[in-house]
Image 1 (cartoon, rainbow, N blue to C red):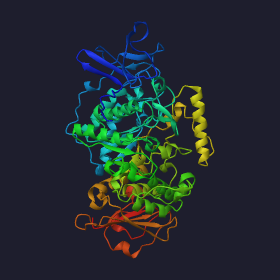
Image 2: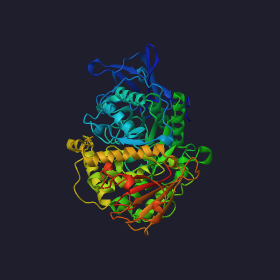
Image 3: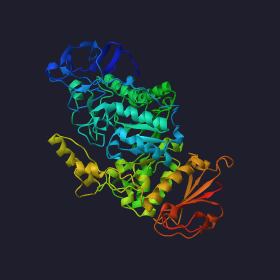
Length: 614
């Protein structure tokens, strides 16, 4: 179906030097008018039905910034569901914007190979006090110096108001106006590429937000056949679905073609329902890869999913898969979280045997790989060991795992400093693509609560009730910050400060571990490691991880020992048979120990060490 000439895409374009073409899918309407301008000065142009629910017209060339809307059967003007710019918000007219007017200056940017990705997830609205695309640019060099190779923006499609996580967007083509709009987003990606940073975008193809959503007035973009956790799903396989699929494929194409993004993260891909012979996920990957090839660089598509079904998502099309480049690995987080916090409520019940679960996550990718899940009350998942570790993004913190906690607390505000350092080692020494959440690298203690800026009373009440029910389901009953208060967003703005010994030490730890990942062949080897637990698997266990060694000449073996508990561990004989390459609990990282060359073989609380030939 990709690029089917019989299925035009919704949108506007400059078709000639002196003409602009307008097209919209509105099968629910018998008549559609283009409204150019605002108020009494607005001009109206009848649009011609061209079949299959599409209407189009051609006008003289319209300059960037001119407001426009569509009238359906004589009704009120509505913004364009395919709008590229909403400078006045979700309930106002759309604005003309031509992506091709931007002059790219990326230098010799050629993208980043998957195996070199170190991803840094950030929320544009709280990463800086200004909360804009432009304000983000001055911080890019600091992230590069740390060892980050790609930033991943939480969703930026236009949402109601000025503050939101981004998952309530209702104009998927239009970058948020309060962040700076489409021009500023192009400037951000261009600047990142000149500096050497890749840029990923989190996109939402499972639902639209509840406020300002005009899609249902135009056509059956949504379906009641499937329900997501946030309302009706997008219509990818019902009547009229060809146009919906074309819209989503054009959206994926836009981010690569018009904004030069280096990849997409597909939000809740398990909530993208499609029984078509060619699933939409497969077509999205094909579109993204094709557009990136035209730019002469790679682009990566990663799915967020907790189905633990790697073959379905990662296998190539000719073997029955969707051909995605990778997927998020929730099991890694859950196992590490239980080890670090001892929490076993909700879905953490499946990982209650913390150290053993973490060992399995290291060695087998999924902890639930076909075994019985107490949380679900059934078997869950399948094996994933046929895929290398660089097909999976691992994390110990992200926006969901922080923001959907009762206090939205980060590890640095709830764990001992030694345990926070252990979390860094668990993540960065794993054979996975690491994903950091903004501020994690220096121990940010400001929370990241859910916040939004809806105006409709019914939506506000429904959201408050829903959040309360979600927390009660997890066994948490207490007051949470008001999502609608501006102060809730303000509390989440990063301090961007590492002026204390603990914060500076933690940042040094992240930087040095990322350097080791680049320099030690064994840590660049994404083969599945061998693991064993010392001291019987209780919370005070030592987890031994063997990386590399498959080819001693090019990838000599490195042994990693993690003290997973708060008690000191005495030396073992084999700990002293290989040279010490690294230890975490030293003054440089905020710990109590001296430099590595004086190590006596004991593992201090939460300490981890690397041994090997280097």
